Image (tube, rainbow, N blue to C red; front, side):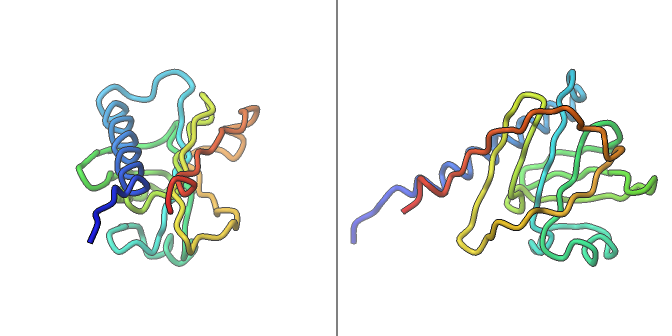
Length: 151
């Protein structure tokens, strides 16, 4: 039996490590300049921790925005926790890195997309921590798809 190198999973692991490093820097120093993040994640991932009303409203995936109003960012080895405001109501979330589907920082046109074979192209529902117009005037980020590297 011959062994092969699984570049796709290695890339996913490395890029999730990049997200962890970015979030750790934000935890220690805050968000610099105009940086902010759109993070889409799988709400059905077994280790995701969100309020029942959020999982009812977003049964497959949701997008959160970390920009102006977030608190208690704690970055761990397997995921991160953060408290975001939903309609002026603070809600704690725990998001494992493995649950992240997209990570976008539109202020610098940076984006990552983690695709699976089952994933479709439906638009993600969004839940923001700030006003709906908080991101007006930004340029679309280029999304890097890693599945093209898989067999």
